Image (cartoon, rainbow, N blue to C red; front, side, top):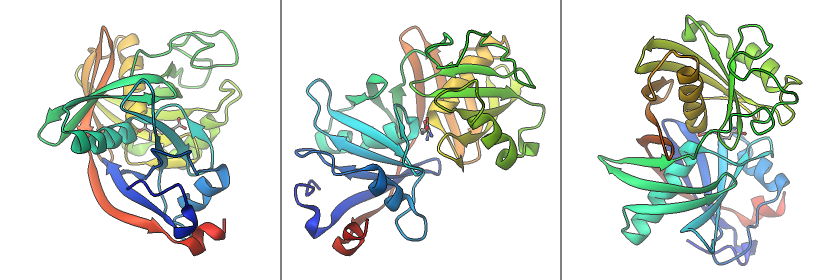
Length: 279
Ligand SMILES: N[C@H](CCC[C@H](N)C(=O)O)C(=O)O
């Protein structure tokens, strides 16, 4: 699928999702990434482009099976995207026949394992748990931020603000999400998760993602939610998280936060030369 040396003939892509968190995946291995901020935005347009929650761009890596860069549809970049990491791992495993591979991301090297039954496990790394690494703009208690509702914070290569609520279904994501995404306590903005504790091994979660959108699932957000819930003494380290798009298994082990879930290939597409010329 690697035809990005000369995009005058257009550009192939894969459309995939993990629990409805949907992705355009461009394979730029063997070349430089052709993606600019304006191109990411144009492809992300649901009406004038393809539309995605995140764009993942694959390039060659000298210390992993593949290097992956993540773009949000607003043109911002993210160092982590759990659901897309699972989808990329599936692509590489299908190519190589390997059941264990390594992704190079902005959050470092992420081991991935074929967990069987169509599931992929990715070690999303250890959480960032100091104010300056989440990052926050000042030194505060990460288990109870000075924000109404005393949310917790954790980084998973990207920032997360996690609220514990009595009723996740009742949260107005459209209003509460952006208010927290742009809160001054988060100098790089933040993803915003609302979690309802079902029991010590089960969480219901809904999410407003940095980059300005409600998504049906957020892999790094589920990892951060599991970390925050455990640090608040509410859950075990291994939990099932039920998102709008389905369930992820999150296990915070000694070597990192492992996330397990499904992937799906929806279609292969081709960005037309006309579309690319118009960016
Ligand atoms: N919007 C996120 C990136 C994607 C996270 C989510 N889709 C995931 O599966 O982890 C951010 O700007 O940090």
